[in-house]
Length: 352
Image (cartoon, rainbow, N blue to C red; front, side):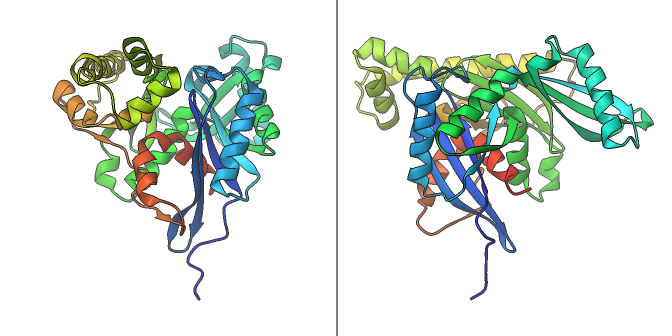
């Protein structure tokens, strides 16, 4: 038999959000990429608060469960910190520097641009390419986050028997996943696409153009507000309210009196995020909106946003171009797709 796909990836993508842990493993072979393992596990309430890990032991136990549920054999993981926890700055440096010389330049720049002592942060950098206005210079992306953000995630993985192989930044994982979604469609790649990730407690706007992230913003807002309103109005526990939100069974007044106002709130927030983007000296009009995150699963939300914002909107599907290993429920995977964008971008990092 021909070997259609390569040996299983040794790195899994692990998205630790405010309400769940999402695991995804992708292998790359001669005929394309395949989903090898996938699972989602809920987190205990308040174990993660706005992307900050509050209870490492509880989160570590949830990661252990999601690994077991997925059936993966990998023991290394790629995780991410939120964009709001990271300071990024594009600096310039002379072209042709050796790695050690470039690192010295980066550290000098970091000392100027980072408002923390350098021994309190983890720093990384990546050469983006030649500077637009000077061929003798290169643009370098500098990224820094408090060391505790890295250590918390390393501890969670260690408690689950995993090792942190990659720590990425969430907006750049979305950029990575978008490259898979766009594929070879150069006409679409040239468009300006806004990926709106509506999570449980945070919503982010990530603008992609020519396959590159050109703008990102993150604000507190998410589906937890809808869950809490269901709790308050119908006297349910948090768990029961979340379940009813997903599977239905709520009273008839839920749609007009609870869900409709929440959809209006989503549209208002998206419109506000786009205004922030346009007011940041960005003169490039957004051509398309892709909705991601768990709260994008609200039925008809893409059409609602199209009607209220005036920009074509649709749910993102990061798995459209991927095969699935036998035994994986592809229909369920596609259904969870909008919430798996960060996990997808992280899993792809394991195939570089």
